[in-house]
Structures are given as structure tokens and as C-alpha cells.
Image (cartoon, rainbow, N blue to C red; front, side):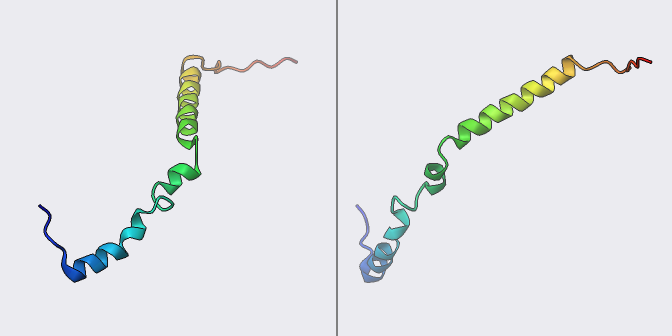
Length: 66
């Protein structure tokens, strides 16, 4: 059974209720929909490009036509 908070505890519990308001929790997540998916897709692109450049490295010599 929960212990009664007393008048002081009740005062602070009521004062802290605003912290749990839905507008204040998970704001960044709701403000940037799709950001996580975009970052994962960009990371996959960068990894793929690095792998492609590693395996399909351009030739070191250059040709000049005169």
C-alpha cells in the first residue's frame, strides 16, 4: 500500500504534473517524422558507396592523347 505523501508531498506532486503533459514528452520524435528512416537510408548509401569505391577502384594510371 502506498504511503501517504502528506501536504508537502501532494503540493510537489501537483506541481510536477506539467512535466508529464503530452505536448512536452517525445516532442523531438513527433517534430521530425521520418528522420530516423532517412538517417538509416543515408548510412546504407554511404556504406554502399564506400564498398563500391573499394572494389571498383579506378585505374591509377592516366592516359593522355596527343
